[in-house]
Amino acid sequence: MKTPIYFAGVAMTPFGRYDGSMQDLAQRAVEEAVADADVALDEVQAYYAANVFGGMVLGQVLLRDIGVTGPPVYNVENACASGATGVHLACHALEAGRYETVVVFGVEQLTSLGGGALPLQRNDYMTAMYAHAGLTLPSVYAMRATRYLHEFGVKPEALAEVAVKNRRHGALNPYAQTRTPVSVDDVMNSRMVFDPLTLLQCCPSAVDGAAALVLTTRKPAQRGKPVRVLASVVQSGRQETGTEDILAAEITARAAQLAYREADVTPADIDMVELHDAFTIAELIYYQALGLCERGEAHDLLRSGATSLGGRVPVNPSGGLLAKGHPLGATGVAQMVEAVWQLEGRAGERQISDVSLALTQCTGGGIAGVDHAASAVHILGH
Image 1 (tube, rainbow, N blue to C red):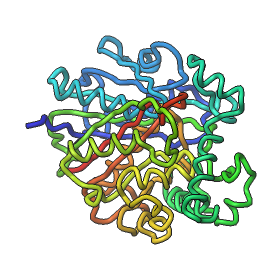
Image 2: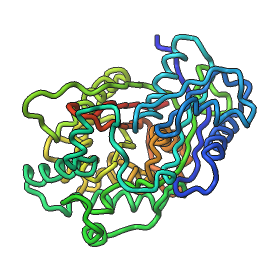
Image 3: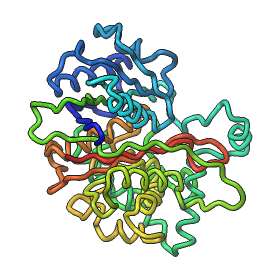
């Protein structure tokens, strides 16, 4: 029988522009998470620090000034999937009996980069070659969007409706970077980035934030019905040869199938999803990859209201990356914070009724020749 892994405590900072230091952000999230778990810092046996652009031994630098020196600190970088990968690695150690209680936190301060499209890989000659030709992540997703609209005969407004839904959810989330609802016209009339993707169809790239989790194999006494990790899967992209299907999201579909098998559930059992909507088209593609609908039916699923609050399987009740924001290292952890709050009935105005199973999905890494470099899927439940 697999060792149960519980969420003893969770916390996150509001996402947005932060004038303080990255240390302040990370320390706030960690201290609030251990307080939520009712444990002391010196009871935590290991720390997993997720970040993308912060530099060497960042976890030790961030934790030093709150007196965390001595226990192992594991620094995790896996692009946008860094935080979720940190959780995955922590689960391995907990299941092996190496530790009983650990903290996973993610943090990023993207405003220090000045905004604009995030840089692609600097250590991959193929990606560098493509970048010189003008290929960036927004342009890649624009190609996917163009293909989707062509193949399934839908209008660009179908993409805009994703942003409308997630902005509507984000308006209910005090932790979201953007809390202003928008209309389809607002989205369509915002500045064009890469046709057909307008500005409001791309997640903000200038955002700071941190999130933290306390994971333990000891059943938390303060939680009446604690949330557990039912499945934790991380996969890497496979080399693509010949003609590829840019709408398949193969790496996410593969990770999701492994997660469903590990948790012994089906897509129909899932009550809510937090997924990686870096661009509007990404959400539609991931509906199919996660098994929420058949190929070509994602826009219909969205329009039916099934993925909105009050629907059959609300997607991104937090507002997702489009509204909540996407501080890379923190995103995968923050998705789980939202899932835990929902499962424990602590989500406030955006609370989903009768939620017992949640799925989080995060992909990352724009490298040449593969779908993505990494994809992480977790399933949480009681």
